[in-house]
Amino acid sequence: MGYPLRTGQAALWLACSLATPATFAAIPDNLHEHPVWLTLGHYHQDALGSGFTSQADDPAFFLSENGKTSPEAELQATLEAIRQPGGGDDHARCRFPARDAWLREQLDLPNTPVDCPAYDEWAETLNTEKVTLVFAASYLNSPSSMFGHTFLRLDPPQDDEETDLLLANTISYAADAAEHDSELLFAYRGIFGGYPGITAIQPYYEMIRLYNDIEHRDLWEYTLNLTQPEVDTLLAHTWEIQDKNFDYYFFDENCAYRLLALIDAARPGTDLLDEVSTHAIPSDTVRWVRDAGLVESIHYRPSAATSVAHSLDSLPPEHRTIAAAVANGYVDVNGPEVRELEKNDRAQLLDATYDYVRYQSEAEGWPREHAAPLSHQLLVSRSQIDGAEELPKVPEPDIRDDQGHDTFRLSLGSGQMAHSEFTQLTLRPAYHDVLDPPAGYRTGAQLQFLRLDARLYHDNDELQVEQITGVEIRSLSPRNQFFSPISWQVGFGGRRTDTGDNRVLTPYLEGGAGGSWGLGQNTQAFAIATADVEIDDDLRRGHDFAPGADLGLLHQNNRFSLLAGAKTKAWIISSQHRQDQLYAEGNWHIGREFSVFAKFTREDHFDRYQSTWQAGLHAYF
Image (cartoon, rainbow, N blue to C red; front, side):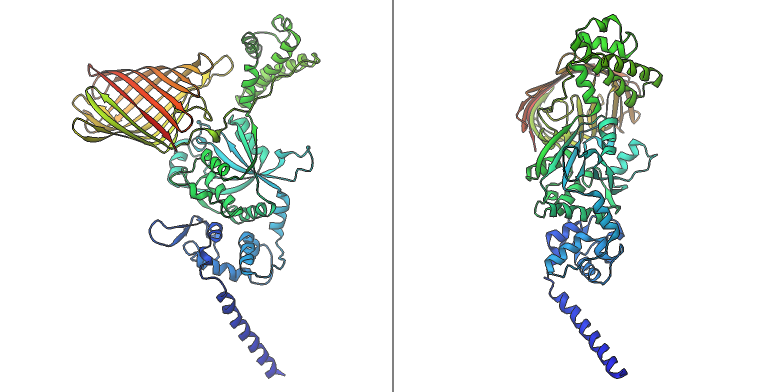
């Protein structure tokens, strides 16, 4: 019996040995270059050569030692692993369910059930029928949120109107930064890839608490028209990359970029990542998703700050004054100023004041000993009024964030400085300034990155770099009797400066803080105390410093924007002198694709008066 048994074992071993190469021989030669496989492996073609490199930076994401740079080796390793018998959470079919399903479909492999307790429980807990792309509006007070933020909400079956989407889960991708890192360190490391990026699952109510309530950011919810199999694929691939390290880059491989990759995996052929060039700004990525026909419905969720501001703005001006006095304890809740109002007016004033006090207590830290009893008094007084009209709900903005102008701007203009005529070309990859079409952007907000201004002077055909803007941020938020935000600005880069003998390109750092005040629906005045630093060998001491001020007016509407004012600086180190300037700039908006601009400055510098004017066209892409 021993000999026949050994013979049978040898025959079986030989059959298996021959079967394995035969099976792999049936694999199409270029299957590893299939767009879906490349998407699931996050492979991108190398800039130089014909190879591929995965953007995944975690060894646990690969089954082959060469998987990061060889999609073919990773495919072979995956095929070998998923063909192994057995199951359990450590099995390749359980670790990579999206890869497994796609390979079995492509190669017609038997789809025998496999036991994956952790994955099955995870998918059952998420219980997802629809996927919603959520966009949180920009928030200038945090470097990580200046362009806005996107994440995915996983919606359970809507069995009835009672289904609470606040309890749904979300998929988000963010830099895994240390809690003690400063905002400046976060910005630096975020730009140059100093943080790992992690895909995480969080409840939606936590995201609302963070973005909607604490950071005062409106949310836009774009429900996608993914089918159930596509939703299942998205979840399967999320499982594959969850807790895996992908290096985070502020401009391109950011929160929005990773979500585009998930949608590409869910619906092959969308190729949303092909839209990304030098940067992936969240509002732009929402446009790409919308333009790809992926959006089924859109819902607006105003922030707590927006809701409170709308409630207060709904009151007549004289009632807003009373509301502010009640909130700050100058007028009693049941004082004559309140009791003399008509029923509807009194009810709406009490509602708006209560909303404001509650907001200030939670968001701005008003003392509990003031806010708690006042809130109680407001509720008691309001409960005594029956049949009054409620405050109007916050209307949806006419223009959504994804409907604003595109963020890349190319500008061409002509002008004259003193008696020298020039043509100027400006390239700005991102993102918005206060004179651009304001629809879809925050009023008074400016955020520009990597802008290049180059001039060709006609008298000598000399081409000069006029300015390189690394970062330029401005936030002009009007103050009123309810809110007192600080207006501020900061910027750095290189610019032409007059040393008294010639104009040299000088590195600079500037900043300032002050206040803004509304003069009407679209106009505000501002006063900013400023400080400038310039560093260059052409300066007498190698650097110079100037405190100063910027006083101006800003008007913004959908057809025309105007910025005018006066600046003064006192240079006090290398050369003691003043630099005074009057300025006016205006943009006439032609839809959201073009603006005609004109600007004029009159400057007194080194006791020389000099005028500069310029006019041209902005084009937005």
